[in-house]
Length: 265
Ligand code: ATP
Ligand code: ATP
Ligand code: MG
Ligand code: MG
Image 1: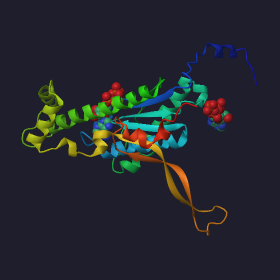
Image 2: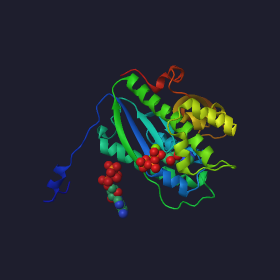
Image 3: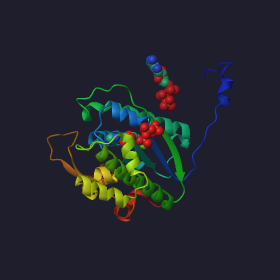
Image 4: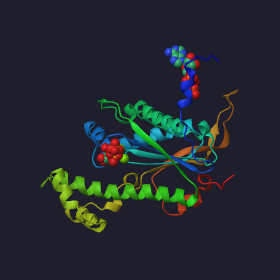
């Protein structure tokens, strides 16, 4: 290894190491996506193409990092859980956070045309990322309940907000819509949507109301022999990443999928 007299500066580097044997969550969030989604004419309040693109970028990250057991996304954010025993990059925080953020951003751009074939990207997006360690299963479940509750609260607000702004007969300015919705509880927003716009909030797509849940599901896959492709394919169990729009606050998801939260090794 070549050494130079300058190499001593390497000792100034500080490494922060993430707590061992704890659930490691990395959350990426779009930088300035209020503007990015407006400049790129996203349908408001929810552009399904944009949510689909986020999920495709997340799936690509799961393909790159087999240690990720679960990912949950809503709006411009995605959270990834790494196995609690992961030793990825010796659990160095900067390395994990920066590679996940840059891979996610690169995948988002790489797949842009698949979801927005008619929209030229006006400028490149970027995502920030943070890592948090959760020591207990309950902490981890509560983390996801927090993000999914946030999805619900924001989506109900945004649905009411854009109904007022896009009202065909009586369009409100964004400021006016803000004032109308200020201090309304969720029952009042539901009522406004139903009585003024005929929107039954609970009938909106789960993709918008619940967010996207990605996890590895044991699935039967027909695989062809590489040595002899003319042979009948063999059925094998493989863990395939699936995308579902479902509740993760209750127990059902976690009971159905124990491999997402295995007991500590
Ligand atoms: P920051 O850089 O602090 O994260 P931000 O502008 O990205 O700021 P957020 O709080 O992260 O703000 O909110 C994300 C914004 O992107 C919201 O305005 C949300 O409505 C919009 N957005 C994200 N995804 C979509 C989508 N699929 N369809 C429509 N709008 C979206
Ligand atoms: P890590 O993920 O730990 O950074 P790495 O494979 O990226 O691993 P580096 O120590 O960052 O390793 O080294 C970068 C590698 O990329 C070297 O092998 C270097 O020769 C090669 N490389 C970088 N830029 C060029 C270039 N312009 N032309 C040819 N090779 C390059
Ligand atoms: Mg953002
Ligand atoms: Mg956000």
